[in-house]
Length: 278
Image (cartoon, rainbow, N blue to C red; front, side):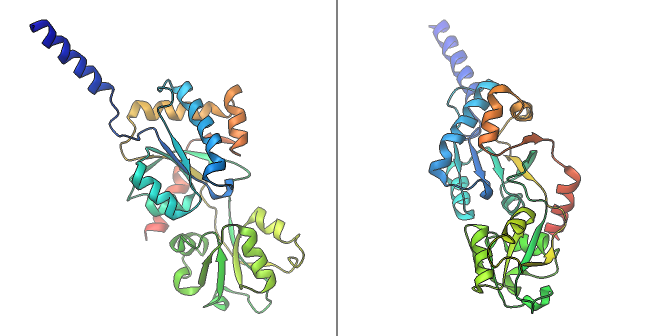
């Protein structure tokens, strides 16, 4: 009887020690709008990504799940309902919810397809030559859900975007471009690559940038609060850092348009965070 009690206590202790501290500690939310697609079409790629991470880190098979979200509201809803422990997210979402979600950037994504180094306020009408000329004008942008980011980072704190513009959310940058060309709106926001491509479109030759941001941060890989142990964070960082150069990981990175995962540029993130919090 005494031996049975001791064995029961040992088994209970083992089960408690192996139980996750957070129900979704290894789950991941991905909010990278330039990946395109939707949650359903992205799911197979996310599943491949997670199975690779599990097999390489030694985490239990099928212990993690993930979701790709294309809007701020849906990303918020997923975080609230599923409480993921890991995220890969566009800078606007990261900076807006860094404190509320207790986010810690552990790596950053390098990608010629996903990362924008600068953003521009683009117009066509020759009457617009400065930010002041756009007071009360229509601005169509994928960033309309993040007016503070537009104000602090894109406009370099020269104006309050929510008050200065008539903002409208568009799902793709091209819709903003066509809006400006047709005269449906006065301005849009484009990165370097989008701006170059827009000028090739019929009617796009007269597009001009009247405001340009300073260097933007890349896409951070984050951990939510204390969801992951220090050991798991270290293992995850090691796994992702090597992933895009590994035989099995390279294909997954290419499918997700990820060049590689690198250490966080702390000085850049800190400088932008300081501006964002002012």
